[in-house]
Amino acid sequence: MTELLTPDEMYEADRLTIKRGMPGIDLMEAAGLACAEFIRTLSGPCPVCVVCGPGNNGGDGFVIARLLVEAGWPVKLLLAGDPVLLKGDAGQAAKAWKGEVLPAHADKLDGAMLIVDALFGAGLSRDIDGQLAGLVKALNEADAVRVAVDMPSGVDGSSGRVRGTAVAADHTITFFRAKPGHYLEPGRSLRGALHVVDIGIADDVLHSVETRCRLNEPDEFAEVIPIPGAAAHKYSRGSALMVSGDAWNTGAARLAAMSALRVGAGLVTMAACEAALPILASHLTAIMLRKADNAGELARLLGDRRITACGIGPACGAGHDTIEKVLSVLASGSAVVLDADALTSFEGNPDLLFDAIRAQPDRLVILTPHEGEFARLFKTVSKPDNSKCERASEAAKTSGAVVVLKGADTVIADSDGRTAINANAPAWLATAGSGDVLTGLCLGLLAQGVPAFEVASCAVWLHGEAANRFGPGLIAEDLPGSIPEVLASLNDL
Image 1 (tube, rainbow, N blue to C red):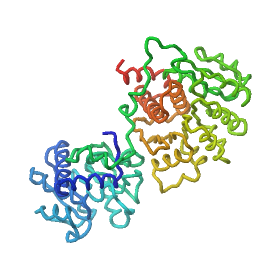
Image 2 (cartoon, rainbow, N blue to C red):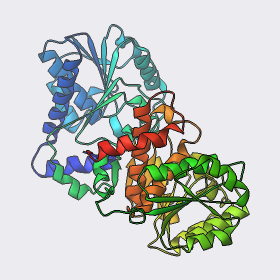
Image 3 (cartoon, one colour):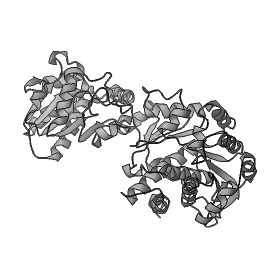
């Protein structure tokens, strides 16, 4: 169930299910039943306030209220709007409710121990303002457990953005499949615990819906992670080259190189200017060193066809020298990971970078920007109205590379339209150097011949899982040593 459906795609799944013969009211009844059953697991009967909106989300609320009353729960139902205007399935669900319908005013929430948010769901098309904004504020301030139906009201189901204001739920119950807005911030933080329930929609409708967005889980990439066989040797496991910064800036590249080695590359070499070599030699043992004072010397190193992947950018310094080195790397024929200064250096001329990437269409290239680097490199696609998935996807198409748009809700996007949202990164991963480790994980997997989208997906997940296993107090140096344990669990070793 890793597929994530936008509100429009979920609407299409509903439509196809109805077309196959399941009435819409039956889907609504199934949704309401699933919600009511979940609510009954939270406590014994207690005062409940169900806050309904004017659409199908409100219709779900009417079903929930009716079923809870039938189970012996005291229920108060509030409606934002005129009950006469409820149409279709929602109107039918409202007619089956035999209790009182009260206007949705903030003071009507008094006394509720549990509030059901059935105002708007995932498909909200406008900002919440005025009296409804006051209602949402009161709902959030109430001393009650908040259960959202489908999506906390005010959170956009596609982007996770807040439309004006939004409910902060303790639990969110959604149907058939989750939505991108459940995993993109701030929606991820506002939805509380997420529960995806079955309401009778067949899995095979996904063949027609053709969603391209997934939750980043091991099922999506585990099969392509290499496990060395008995005849493996260091070159058969891939040879990776990492480019270091100057003598005062070697730490970032060291973190990346060690991570590439830990994730399975058979051989990792550091390319550095002559002044940095003694410093690197004092810190590194299993990682080889080679001198590369400029782009020409780097190109000569990359002439060794045993090198299968190269990483460049962390602490390299933004400017002309880095631009020349990046272009040499892209001309080499190896797979490439570009991060940090390798991206920022092209701020004034991004097409120079994109043209070099697209010059060899079979080349595997991964870009790993955080939001600041992304904004500098992709000014034309950094539109605030677009979701993070849309921005990353457009950037991948523009650049011809796989794009990893980092953050608490990292998005991985391929130029073919596939996107994945990562959800396992803990807050303590936000520490200096952790991004350099991610660069190294991408580098090590690329060196082993794994496809770029799967490389990025796996690296991001491993990164988060390693941080989870280490726990609070994590610093970037802790991450490479945590990778073997995560790999072993992933491969059931």
